[in-house]
Amino acid sequence: MKKFILAAALLFATAFNALADDIITRINGEAIKARVLEINDNSVRFKRMDNPNGPDYVLPLSEIKSIQYDNGIVENYSEALPEQERYTAESYDVRYKDISSSYNPREYREKFDDPFTPAISGIASFLIPGLGQCIDNEWGRGLGIFTANIGFSLLELTEASLMFYAAADGSSYYRDNGLTSRQSNALMGASFCAALITGAAHLAFNIWNICDAVNIAKVKNMYYQDIHLTPQVAFAPSAASGLQPTAGLSLTVRF
Image (cartoon, rainbow, N blue to C red; front, side):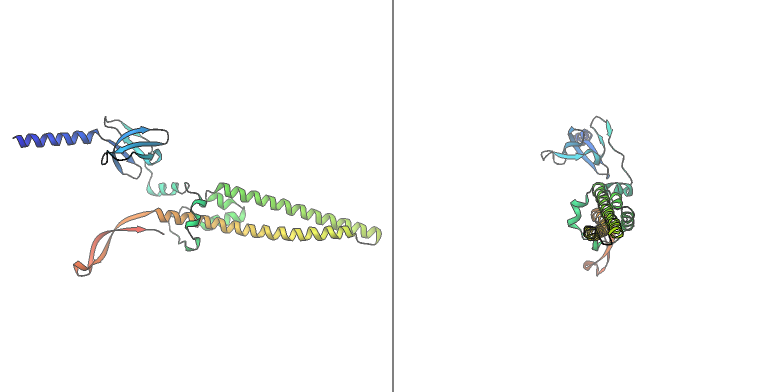
């Protein structure tokens, strides 16, 4: 009888302690037994109940779906998104310059769920310089490229105006005096050379612009393929079973 009472008391104490825990539920479905210490505008600081004497843990509110307190009150912070929608939304959080050194776009292999389409980015930047970068959520880079193209265009317009002016001046001088103005010839030659250099630089810049938009899309896709891990059940040969397929748990890592 005493053993029964003791077991019942232990069970009651365990249940009470479990009810006394705060439950933090993350967007990915993970439930954390914790003691919430502080909540501010951006994060939650807490102790893990499986490590009560350990360090304080901090989670951003954007990763938390809800918190259930020990008194039964539940606070909802964000609704869990379907996996595909969440995966696509996360694509706007990373900047190209932060990951460009870690990936080689030549090694990119297309996946059906990639958040960006390199071909569309390249075509967009061909039609409007910088638009592909904006589609890839690199707005600062895209607007900078667009502004640079306006600068190239204005410079080319200025050089073309000087060429036409020199040609018109030389023609009128030749008609009036039977000679060609040396100053007009010099201005024409300088304007023509400057226009060739500017045009070549503009063309090279726009070719780079198209390639850059494509590479940004590829690198960002590779980044999300890399962090998107899919656990799955697989069969592998086992020497203990005579090299017969044996059920086990594997992890698919996308590169």
